[in-house]
Image 1 (cartoon, rainbow, N blue to C red):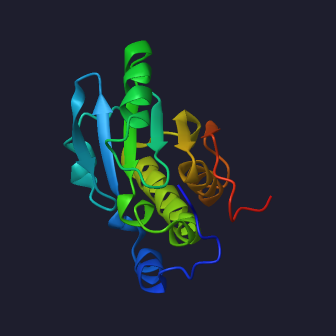
Image 2: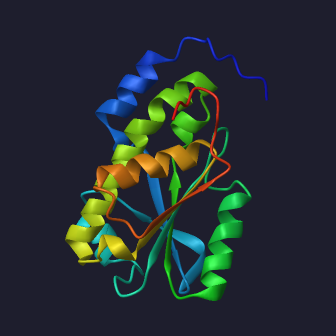
Length: 173
């Protein structure tokens, strides 16, 4: 894809994402529901307690990249690999609203979505008692930066952050 690195970002969308990072969807898969997700909602404890989430097994969170969504091939590939190998909770973060915007907007919004994911992980910790050290964050492309921001939001306490092919444009290290 051709990316205009000097494009003006969509400030209206960015402001909305900043105000409410819960615009994103958290889709739970376990060995009990390998193909049909259960939606977990931040600050809705019932969405977690009434799901197949098991605080006694590790949790893997997958974040897709730019121009992607929950159905992009990388998500089911990683999900199926984890569920085939181990009894884990797999949560696919679908942040398509921002990810499907132009690159400049999506890249600028990644820190806010990452903070939202970090807040969601803290919520899971409060509701279920699952330790952050049982959580592994996996991100692809812009999702790699997103999970890095989420790890920072929870003070770096997650077990691991895996960045797969992190996006380069508009990122300085």
